[in-house]
Length: 431
Picture 1 (cartoon, rainbow, N blue to C red):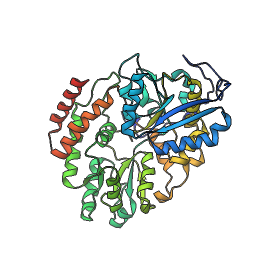
Picture 2: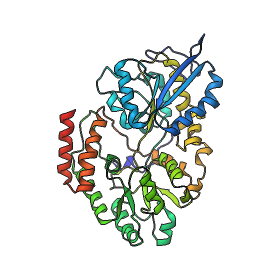
Picture 3: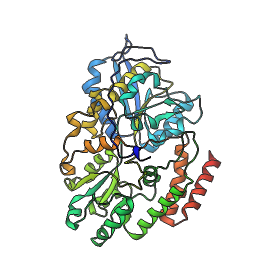
Picture 4: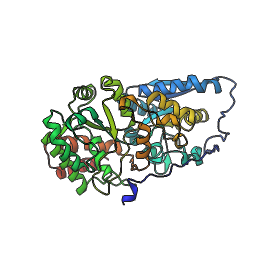
């Protein structure tokens, strides 16, 4: 089992330019159907940074090649986008051509086989699927074998640490190999100096899931069966609660409160995917040069090196009358060097498009992380990253895990097994 974690896989490169589709007119890559009049394709999204990237792509790349195809970007706050989209699907009107589908929101739209509101992209991808880092690029948007979205970012979780405080306290961040060693060898000195060692979320499933998943656990298997009821889940929940009670771990807070704690030095390590680096820079600019990164400690010898965290995939709606143009836009965004490297330059996101992984641009040094090369860490971690089984009922399940497991155990001290049983019972009843 250890082969899956710490080895480096050879980075595969394959170039394919075939475009074939079921329900799509087959065209050579780089072409869309000729239009007598201008065509407008629309995309609904929720993230300002992705909107900026796509607008830059339209201005710098798309418009010159396809002057008759306008791309209309529409931003809606995250919590409002999904009910708005569901309402459009139910009404059968006002449906966009494309959607930025956040990983956690995917399941609610594809629960009933045969009525998925998105177009499958398998045939369009063809052999270019080999060019993508599957755990980040397609797996989260794959349901019943159909790929409904493509993510442009490789998102392995890394550990970020305040190297200035570590140096001041004489602590060796690389000494602990396991999470147990991490807490026991670094926690005491950290607390004596007035800092929590690590920031963990107490009101969200995500931070529990990172460690559970890294240790080999899953919320669902590939057949949709719930896998949370396990000794491993109980063990990790109990361990995280113990670290919080001891003061080694501190509540990371949410939103602005999280970055206020970061700026105050309330914690000296925190984990996050590469996209988190951008938020660190935006919300804690005065800490530039004080952070460094390393790989996660492991739970035991069977742990993965890391796991994916978050992600957004671009999908085409089944109702779109402009699927050719929509696919061409998605292809240029995600399956070309120009589009994927532009996303890296604009958003600091490491591309899921593997043919550019050896580009010098991706291996640049970063002053925020004291001259480290984030791309080296990201590429290595991506080569040994766990995959996620995203079930159609994922959103419903993680809501129960939020309320009845994580919050109940970490904040109220409820027995982990009792909390897990209650969450699974509620989920199965509401499913």
